[in-house]
Image (cartoon, rainbow, N blue to C red; front, side, top):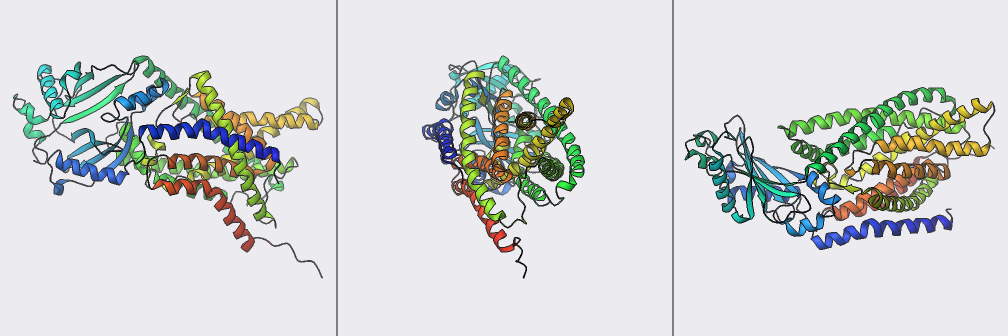
Length: 574
């Protein structure tokens, strides 16, 4: 049984989490009306209708549409940092949303229509007719003529000419830049880029019309384009670029390379401590991690495609396939690390006199899983409260802010309700690698060093202090693996996750590995469940509720399976 003191702290953590993170988010959704988002399928249907109604393309000439959620992460970053998101949404979101569905519709072998739609209303907010291997005109044409034609296109699409002034920028493909004359948001400027249809250029003697619309599919809008962007100040863009470079370096040298070293060490220590453990340890959880994460990776195919589009890759489908293959290769290595971490970590702790991980063969395993699940929920509430207070404090102390990331978007998942799978992937792999093996390894080094220095065994108090000290490097390595998230400055997550990593380590020593795995899974399940409840997709409401209950359901299923198939205590001898 868990004491009343833990119940009180758990209740405090849950209240802090709700009022610091959930309640403001819920209020902002009510104010902005972000409920009732379109699904990708609904966005594709709206785009096909727009292609026919707005561009005059017969439905029979439209290819298979593909949709992806795109976001102006640079603009969102600036608005978030300057606390201007609400002001932008009030002033500009209806016509220039920061997040859109980009729907690509093939129009034959060498051209396609790229339509950007408002995610709530389905209204067309930007478009581009992309051609391959054809002359599209560009900056070598008469600038005055391009500006005049662009103004005509703006007026044709309902833009008031007096609200926009030319920036003097003409893109290589002939798109003319305009800037809003209205008051900007902070130092950011709202800009649109317009490329007139090539039918207009033909009248000026450029001869582009015949080459761009020779297939006759898009005779009135051939080669046309209208896009927009929120342009943050140059100083902010330089800051953002430096933060992303720092995050990439920290990920490589603080996480990826150390994990390769940890894999080698895990193999070595699993052999060195094989007499204390069994190679069956992790034989189920490591493959389970790989299967679940592989399923989630395939589920993220639209997200990889969106990432490729935002990166400007010409073949997003091929890039998405490459990302899936690369991730599967990385997952195979991570599964190996998870397996050997389970074996080595179990051996290290048992050699130190601590049995933190019960075995399936133990008669009370099912009951201990149920107990670990219950403790896991309570500990998760504590973690969520600590995280909420830490992030709030870092917002004031460091000016921390978050941005958007299309790879984390439920709108870019084939089946959003599979998102909770990721909670188990993280809970299994990170607790076995970082807590069970990582803390055990650093504790072994620290106590061994103290033994050699003192020429005797450290005192119980010193050994306890060294055990807690071992949590710091292990938690730091864990934190380095999360700096790629869209939270700035990048050391925000380092501070937050080192704190939470030490908390998880303490929980493991106090309640055992099963409890801390369930605590980690429950934290992620709650965060993901809240995201699904408030992402505006009606189909995600049930998925969000399932995410909350998933740790309980899994623990109950394990209890039933162990009751049916688990080991029985030996019969008394006659």
